[in-house]
Length: 192
Image 1 (cartoon, rainbow, N blue to C red):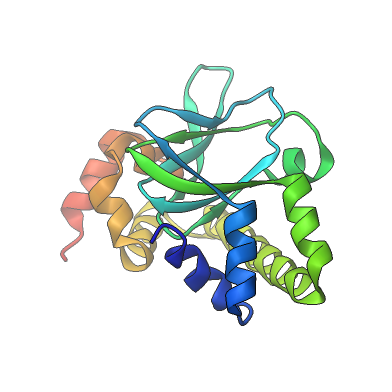
Image 2: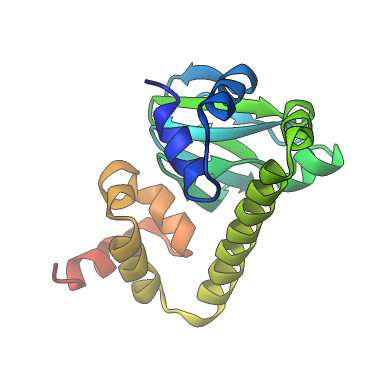
């Protein structure tokens, strides 16, 4: 069932009753995206939050040079949104695009607010999810400032080996802050 992965993810934060599962189905919509489809476009309002069922996505910014700076690589069972655009109604400053064919569920900001209004339990879920996202972003900033490229790659290999297997090298290289050629050298030096 399409929603079972979402139920499992939400259940890691709060207990879900059958009625609440039905509520989730009424608010979250299913969609399929082919490789290359943009879910969030820089300069546009991003008023949807996503839960990735299958596939891989890149969250990125286009630099003045025209190169993509990969900010995050999203995997199945990830919650994804442009925080500033979603919550403040500002235009997105980054883009989200499918690297592979993807399946996902989405909810609008308005519907999420409606879900929050149903009970305090949903506020708790939202707060805990946001806390996890902020901790992850803090770790990413610290890693970018303190780890070598080789250590960043090793950490990615340890924590998300599926990314290494399913995402093109050029995106992984950008994500850890090196050129693809440097990543090839790093990969050849690491014994698995």
